[in-house]
Length: 180
Image (cartoon, rainbow, N blue to C red; front, top):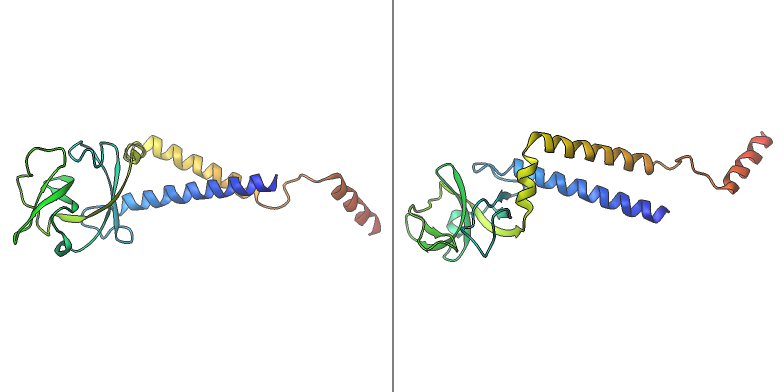
């Protein structure tokens, strides 16, 4: 029984930590911020980069210097009020030209250091759907409430004496009480 409890506690704690890390990553992913330990995350909202990643995927970027951008890299940048992640097609003195893998033409505007956000590091398929759902206040509050209940449950179950004693323990306790 103790092994099941340890495994359950470990899994519950791991899930809470993962949730908190992704929440923090999203919180610190504003285009002008430094990110969370140099990382930023964004939900893919179009199919312009298929098959590399799809709508609903979650892209994680590493904040690097714009000088490190080279042809073939996938970068994230600001385009008007939109955050875009596309592949670099050409590097010039003024900036870089990008294009989505599924697009037939290059993006019209060159990306400069001012618009650049970071280099694509990896993608987590469909996690962006969960991130989008969690941005709805009712769903976010429900998840936070469930996590609080889980943590309380884990704390109460791991606090040693949970009221369950073997017959042998009960008898030993009675013998000790009679001696006093």
